Length: 417
Ligand code: HEC
Ligand code: HEC
Ligand code: HEC
Ligand code: HEC
Ligand code: HEC
Ligand code: HEC
Ligand code: HEC
Image 1 (cartoon, rainbow, N blue to C red):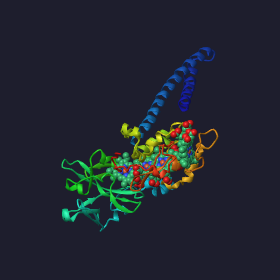
Image 2: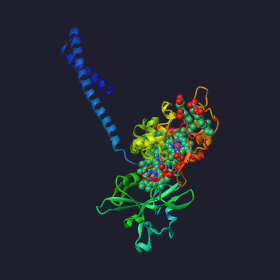
Image 3: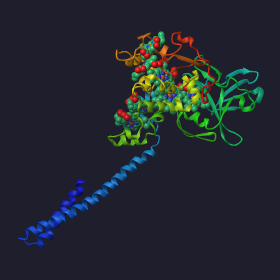
Image 4: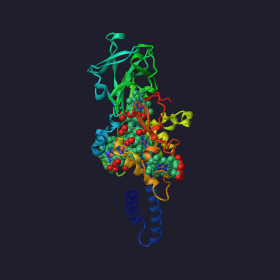
């Protein structure tokens, strides 16, 4: 702006000196003065007009900059590590960063090499082998030497790992066969995948696992990866695991801004969520209430404790704390749960439940709040979840272990109670 006005003033002075001085000899000063003012206004208006156009242009440019937000692309955590090495290093050891692998890469899947596991007379005995592509399974007594591939391992193995295979059905649609056996960390064994206990095989593929169709193929793989396109039997543009940009969004514009040294780096990244927005972001994978049937939501069967955002969003602690409680009040987003001890978690409860002006526990004001108000519930075989619907419970006077739920039929994709 200022350079335009300067130019205008300089031009005015030039015209005034050269033109008027010549036409109006001394003595006609008043007329010269008046004409000068008119000229000044004219020049100034012309320049201010140009200036406004320039401003329009720069505004349009900055709008274009904002629009280019939509073309932010994934750059990968190796790139983030150039400036956030400590977070990347911590995160690489977290379950999020280890929840998807090919069976060739997966240490858990590789334990199957040359193993034989007897199921029952219906299914027979699985014979596993490993080759260049990964792990395969066969049932020689039923299908001779035919090998069934096992492509990917989902779940870090901290709690469980399930293998899946992508295939094409007769209509050339992608299907996902979730293998019948799952690795359970609790007793370090392969056992029936939750949800498949009552399956009975009717086609050859059924002998190896349960078939999922779209949209559940995309969803299953989607929640365990940062970005991917399922195309036929292939995964294109695969960026495996829940990495930085799965939560923060694609980072290319943030990185470019940081490299230029821009002051405002954050516009291009998701990082400052309100409590509710953060809970719902986590809930895109950990499940939000809107993905649960209203009737189930109302009944709140034990199987729902798997979905922490569902419980938390209906807790008085969340509802009545004015946005002060989110997932990261109690969890570090870049590590596993053990980064905070129960002792530390109790201190977090007490940060809102200790002072005289706060609501505090009449029963056990310094006890283990988690055991009574967020008890761990066994869903299947050692897969435990803490009920995030923090509340005074009907079963609270009982020992928490007596409040055992019915086992749920399924983990993984579909989850009925
Ligand atoms: C060239 C250096 C650089 C790279 C590469 C980079 N960042 Fe940053 N990032 C910064 C700087 C500088 C800040 C501001 C200071 C700070 O908070 O550390 C920042 C801040 C952030 C913040 C906090 C924003 C806020 O609201 O305070 C997040 C989240 C973040 N970066 C995520 C990422 C992710 C994810 C990647 C990889 C996709 C990445 N960064 C790559 C330099 C970088
Ligand atoms: C893109 C999907 C996705 C998003 C988004 C996501 N998670 Fe997860 N989360 C997972 C998956 C998958 C696992 C299972 C990891 C494994 O295989 O053990 C997991 C596991 C966890 C665990 C268990 C870690 C452990 O030590 O056992 C915690 C805690 C967790 N997530 C918290 C969060 C929080 C908090 C957020 C939001 C800030 C979040 N997650 C967002 C997919 C996601
Ligand atoms: C809507 C997102 C979502 C979908 C769809 C999904 N998962 Fe997960 N998965 C998660 C999250 C979040 C966790 C961690 C917490 C939990 O166990 O619920 C997880 C955990 C797991 C675990 C480890 C168990 C554990 O408790 O840590 C396995 C194994 C697994 N998923 C396999 C699958 C398979 C196989 C499919 C598809 C057939 C699938 N998942 C579909 C989000 C999802
Ligand atoms: C599961 C979701 C999730 C993943 C994956 C994730 N973040 Fe974050 N990150 C968050 C949340 C939520 C916050 C805000 C924390 C808070 O409000 O306490 C955050 C905060 C940050 C911050 C600013 C605060 C700080 O701790 O310095 C940076 C920088 C950051 N993340 C970088 C990264 C990088 C780099 C990665 C990949 C290695 C990553 N994040 C992976 C959810 C995630
Ligand atoms: C950010 C603050 C905050 C944190 C952290 C917090 N709470 Fe709360 N909690 C509240 C508020 C506010 C209420 C509602 C009090 C009222 O009714 O006025 C509440 C209510 C409760 C109630 C009564 C619920 C009912 O059914 O009426 C229990 C029990 C409870 N909290 C336990 C806990 C436990 C256990 C923890 C830790 C795991 C915890 N809270 C962490 C703020 C918090
Ligand atoms: C042995 C089980 C037990 C433990 C441990 C326990 N509570 Fe409670 N808490 C209860 C019961 C039972 C009630 C309901 C009391 C009643 O209404 O008579 C309750 C009530 C509450 C309330 C609601 C009080 C009100 O006036 O509405 C809060 C808040 C609370 N507890 C917080 C905590 C916190 C924080 C801790 C950990 C420091 C904790 N509790 C530890 C059993 C427990
Ligand atoms: C008031 C504290 C608190 C809040 C808020 C909270 N959690 Fe937790 N969470 C816990 C505690 C305590 C555990 C048990 C940790 C342990 O045993 O080490 C836990 C465990 C978990 C686990 C492991 C599986 C399980 O259920 O035991 C996951 C996954 C998880 N939380 C996700 C979330 C997500 C997602 C959010 C936000 C919707 C969230 N948590 C909010 C306290 C909290």
